Amino acid sequence: MQAIKIQDNIYWVGAIDWSMRNFHGYETGRGTTYNAYLIIDERITLIDTVKAPFKEELIARISSVIDPSKIDVIVSSHVEPDHSSALPFIAALAPTAEIITSNPNGLKGLTARYGQLNYKAVKAGDSISIGSRTLQFVPTPMLHWPDSMVTYCPEEKILFSNDAFGEHYATARLFDDENDPDVIMYESKKYYANILMPFGKQAQTALKALGGLDIDLIATGHGVIRRQSINRIVESYRQWSGGAVEDRAVVVFDSMWGSTEKIAKTIVEAFASKGIAAAYYDIKANAMSDIVTDVFTSKYLAVGSPTINNQMMPTIASFLCYIKGLRPINHAGFAFGSYGWGGQSIGLVEDELRAAGVEIILDKIRVTNVPTTDQLSEIATKIQSIA
Image (tube, rainbow, N blue to C red; front, side, top):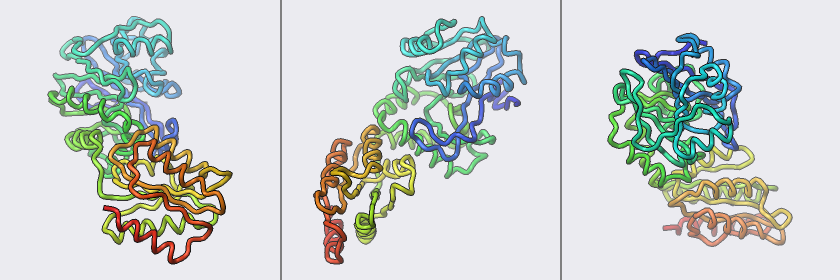
């Protein structure tokens, strides 16, 4: 395991998790990286660590450059274990190293997890000299934990951005321009939609705080290091955090015997005939995090379920719970479904959509048993009437 040079005397020493497929409920089909960076200066500095199972990879990469015991400073940008759980092992190898964390939440979080180590808490505006370079600390609370912060090195024009501007994407080619730009942007959007969507206001605050920085490189906490797509990702964050949506529809459903599925297909075709692109998602065949990525920037959301045991299908209940936690903004939608006798599911879906902040623009569509041709035609007419 070798360190990879990204600038003179600055190295990537992180780990690649090729096999990770789930990140607390978010399906990660392309794995991830845990990025850490080593700066060789008068005070040797490590920016972040890795997830504990990958500590040997981190130590091996550091050791390919210097003896880990020579580390003088460790910057811990974020308490979450995918970035910090190797910290006690590195601290044991470098017992005199000063551990920089945010004040007060980083200090509280690291102490609660790892006990008393050689911490130094910093706040907005604080900086340290490590020799020929300076490290400036910028708190970014709730992106996506209260303790989160980023580190800026003005001499190198590098922003060590931790969870901001990154994506879950496993790659041995570290830089953005060494990878497919469309894949990278999709994974960045997916990351924002499934992790940062509830924190749009905080993202806007962070963008303002970072707005005056001259940045040539964004060294992220996950995924690629950005040198060619800096403006693109920053502008995307600006749009995403403001709740920008496209004139597009997403139709999500589950079906037992095909009746709710027929309604879903009719809705998709009706949107298309109205000139609005529509996506069709059978929830049994699609990962929720992929659906959410599409919902995120689509104006319309239609959700359908048949009734089972006086409730909606558990798959749809799970999806709506997930959506409600992400708190989408600027969305409009409606509920639909078929039923045999009670039909409670459609009203429950509508209630959950409303609770998630979706504006209900069409009365719930309820069809008993198998929809007739006339009923499907009537549904299509209702969709086409949407302003």
